[in-house]
Amino acid sequence: MFLPSISGDRARSPTRRADAATSTSGDPARAGDGPGADAELPAGDTRRQGGTAEAGTQTLMHDSHCHLASGYAAVHMHDFSATLAESLLRQVALLDAAGVDCCLCMGIPTRIEGGALSCGCGHDFHALGRSYYMPDELRDNTRPITVADLQALRRIGQYYNPAVDWQLAHALGSLPAEVRRRLLASVTGMPLHDPNGVHDVMRLKRDHPGVFFWAGEFTLRKGVVETQNRSYQPDFSPEAAIHAYLAFFARASMGATMHCDVSEELECVRTGQAGRAEYFEDVWGLFTRHPGNVIVWAHLGGLGKYSPPSPRHEDNLRRLLNAFPNVYIDMSWDVVAAHYSPCPAPSLNSSQAQRDAFDPAADLLLRRRRIAALAAVISEFPTRFLCGSDSLVAMRAQSLTASYAIYSGFGQGPGSAAWGGLFDQLSSGTLELVLRLNTARLYRRARRHGLEYERQGLLADMRAIQAQATMSGRTPNRWP
Image 1: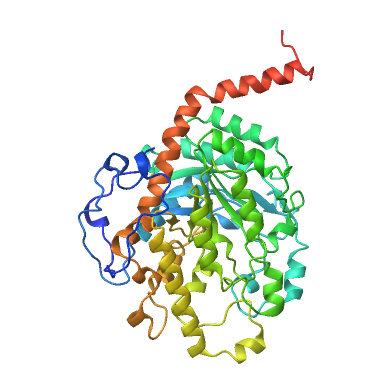
Image 2: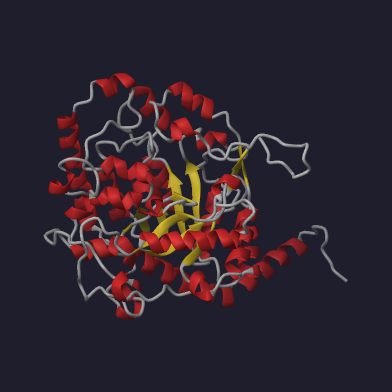
């Protein structure tokens, strides 16, 4: 399950500016785990070989955030009649086309309430139920979203589907070894309202050893999604179940990817303004309680589709990375990358009136300042950012490369090629860390220490839990 070797024609990088800083400050794992240690790199790594590709060519990378497993409904699989293993093989073919070597494979742990498929009896057909947490007209941005839209979306119900991890483990077990090495399984089916769900994660690791060394994406806050969940509501109190999960992840050396919006999406849509980072202190408190975890904060630190970065967002990231050496930032989701696109465009939370009054020149200046500010933070902390797609069971390779294309400035409209995108503001060394080496290092570290825990600690912990249950007199407390 080690990350595969990288060699040959696939090991290419686009031409990049090399004048940005390449500081390695803020790397908590550099001693023994960092990219500077050759023993920690995949065999055949090409970081000293250089080489360029034509502009627009997808760089070989590791995807730190990808939803390959089936999720909400059958429509998120290529073929409802196919097994999950067959669906994964089709996704791997798209990884090849996109130039993605390995990915963290995250199942979708929730389902949308309502509707059903026919059971095949010929007379019991129901319309296909909802498969996503918003209708296509809003998902595809065919019109401006309104507060009324968000309020209606909040009434859609979701519920947890813990079986998703067992299904993924079974599917991966039936795939060829060379394919399994590229799909790095992550536990997602965790009911975040119930700390006893930790026991299910332990059983999952016990039944499927050597498979799960990562957890997440788990969602603490996400726009309308947090109100759709019938079981969980955002909770950052000392009694919140998330603390039990994170405590176990630290003990088992499992990395964790967290989705938590930093700004209130409804307020952004109501005002048509940038985010205000209302929830930054909640996240800060969570990180303070869990210094022993490796935590990846998804979507550039909690940005959302309808919540553009606050004016102080990059400064907040710098504060966070300075304060918490165990925290990392993933750059996934194309709608988040769009906030840092070099091409002027109204934000998706803009009203029609704001779109009518849109000033491209002013927006271009804002975007260039925003890109420069983020590039400075990445260059200051080059080992703390991870590239990802947040693709949801992709139907085409472009879904896996959409975020990369935006950050690279490819196809972003007139003038973008001359000035370039975010990635053009980074040195080639920093870019290589962001695209693949950081993800590879974190996963290898989690796997190495996670295997040790599975061999030496997991069964002992489970027996200790059983002993406590027996001593408490719970039924059954004795077996013949």
